[in-house]
Image (cartoon, rainbow, N blue to C red; front, side, top):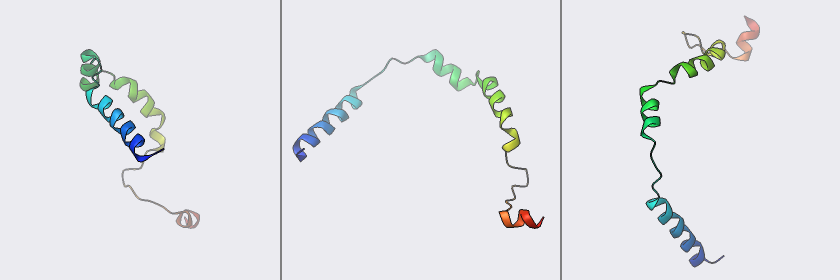
Length: 68
């Protein structure tokens, strides 16, 4: 494909993106910003809590683990 056709396609896509305006769901935006779904994520976070880093944030390499 020649440079002219490629540039024309990029220009077309850029123009479509520039002037695209989807309908905004302000109620969903408000729920997201106020954090009303926070409890939903805390259940998921509790599943992975055992894999979280310790408070001291020390990193032990494989060699140090074998000596310990």
